Image (tube, rainbow, N blue to C red; front, side, top):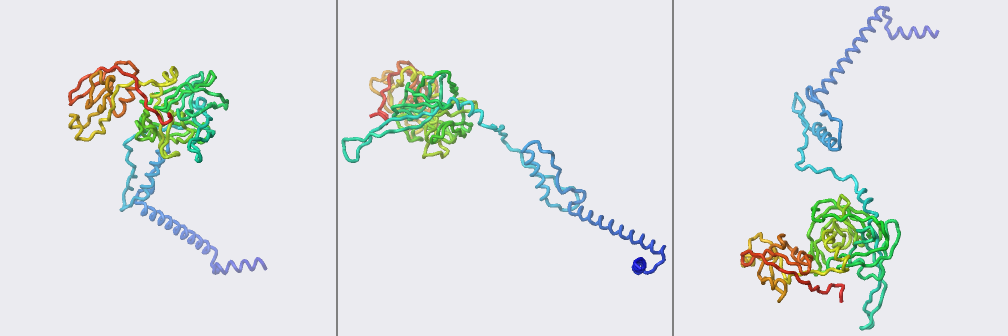
Length: 433
């Protein structure tokens, strides 16, 4: 019964055709099915070719990336090919490759860690304690004494414990404590200091220390990488990096004692309170400046460092005498660049002339004895061009009693003057009574 039922069902679906007829029908149906499949495949292929363009490709081949730059170029090429319109049969448009950059930058430094590791043992924390007297709000002639504490940075320049820092870090200190990178602390004594340049030297009783190499601040350029190490806000041995953003900043740019000698390096490496006295390093790990001042308060991308070449000039005298005895020409000057066009014409100076205009000559001073007078323009000092405030620095560090040659112009006529430098009479600084 079960078999008979199945046979009846199959026969009904086959319309009771003879056996050979049923076989031939199955073959025709298989052939028809195969034909429909071929037609479908051909139709899909034709549609795909029409979308791409005959013989075209929807993507340009991407070479194996050998660097991040090649990956960027490959991505750009692929994107360009995908979005390029196809106007009809023919080859696909070539991928657009960005123009080559006109300036090839050198490969950047991978890490500042080697510089930090190299310099860190030579950077010290300076802690100061002292007292100051404040005017009493209740008694006109009586003051109130209060304790003060200070924090700064310094760096070792000699293996026998000589340390350079800022004068403003230690100027009011009764006691100075130096803490090394290994947390060992020492009481330091002041060896020498110079308020005019904000440079100070202290010494601890220790030997075998690791000094930093003093580099060449004249060789560093605007845009060069620099690294600052210090103790901002008491966070010891903090490292920050940036570039030299300007050179030759002076007291007009930085609101400090106007009687000072300033020729600051400007940097955008973060400098904050506590960084003062710390080193500014180039990529060789050499000191190119002493981090000294900030403008506007806090790290705002504008910090200032004393050029290390200035320190190298003064350091021997500070170690020997404890102070700086400056030489002088005995003149008061004005930068020629600040003259009005009418004044230049009256002095018979070219528009691009540089130098220092003599405004006043000290009676019986070195310049007066050499025959200089107001209206003269000093153009060179020992053969070196005089620009901006450079004459003041050159004359003050040349040495008392030293004869120097000045290139001078008077009413447009050049001549040389031989001057024996005298002693500079220092005006009172802001920290002096």
